Image (cartoon, rainbow, N blue to C red; front, side, top):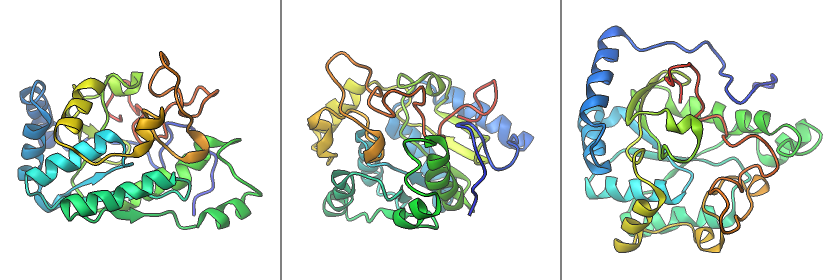
Length: 256
C-alpha cells in the first residue's frame, strides 16, 4: 500500500501522452462530437471500445443518468463504484435501485484496507487533517487498479462544476491514468440533467432531495444552502474541491 505524502494533482508516475495515431483520432473525434448529445457520445464509445470501455460512478445524479443511457443502448459496459468505506448509506442504496431498474449490478472496487484498518494504521481518520492523502489512498489508487487493462473510461463530470472540469473535452486523453476518457455530460448543466432524470424516472440518491447537490464521502460532504455553489458542500471550509480523479495534470488540460 502507498503511504507517501501526495498533493491533489499528484500521480504515482509521470503522465505521458497517447501514441501519435491515437492522439490524432482523439483530436478528430473530440471535434466531431463536441456538440453531440450524451447518447451519441456514449454510442460512439461503446462501438469504438466494446469490452475495453468501463465506467466509474459515485452514484451521483449524473452517473445515474449515464447508466440509464447505457441501459437504453443495451450496453454491457462494466460499471464500478469506488467504495471508500466512508460513503453515505443513501449512496450505497442507489446500487440496489439500479439493479432493480436495469438488472445491472454495479461492482464495488475497494482499497486494500478497510476503514477501520486504515484509521488504525494512521492513528485515526485522515479525512479531516490530510484529505488529499485520504482521497489518494482510497480513491485514486483503487481507480488506477480498476482501470488496468482498459482502453477508455466514462466519467460523469460537467464543465460548469469546477475550473478543472471546465477545461475538459467530451473525448480526451487522461494523462493521470493513461487511457482515453469520455465525458458524455460535459456540456450539459444541472437543469438539463435533472429534466431527463425526472421525465424518465431515473433512480437517484435520495440525498439530492435533502440539500446535497454533490455527494462524496459522508465525513467530507455537507448540505448546501440556497444560493451556494453546488460543490460548496464538498470539503467545506477547505480550498480542496476535487478528490484527485479529475484534476488537470498538464497545462493543456490533458490530465483532467
